[in-house]
Image (cartoon, rainbow, N blue to C red; front, side, top):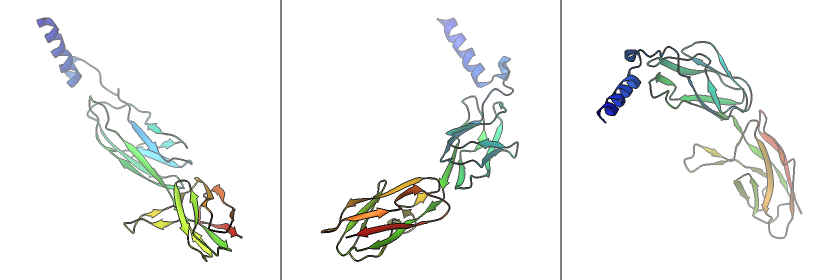
Amino acid sequence: MKNLYLRSAVALSCALSLAACGGDDDGTMQLGGTVTNVTVSGLVLQNKGGPDLKVEPDATGFVFPDLIATNTEFDITVKSPPSNATCSVENGKGKSSVYGVGRIIVRCTLIPHDLKGKITGLTSGPLVIINGDHRLSIPANNTEFNMTQLAENKKDKLGQVGETVAYGVSVLQQPPGLTCRIDNAVGTMGKADVDNILITCN
């Protein structure tokens, strides 16, 4: 039993200090993390200004090709974001350890745009339309609409759609006594607001 405790203590000591036990930790750890919302090419990462690492569309993670040793400083930055997003790095700076590299996350936020259009014949209301889980109630006699609304904090916008994201506007609730149809309701968000949606009620 005493020998078992002794072996365990030696193993723990080796784990905490590989060099002291004759271990070779020169480049044995991967430096990487996760990415979100990379839908097009263009995202390029660097570690301490080193070689470029290109992140492909639809990737959920990244790994730099060169292994690093423990106690090595790293500083991951975004050299260039995709054309349709802004990106930031969380937990991207620090030192590697025997417990691994901290959880590094590259978060990309797709550039948002409005969904809007014209309305004809809305003589009663409300008309309720939806895009995904966002809904908009439109009172009678409105001749135009915009799915975008300000949140309670008056800063964030709700109902916008990010570039390259599909949208589909549909009627959730018809206005009393009327039937409304929506033209140009389905598509993929491009580089500018969508403003050609037409709602016709009769």
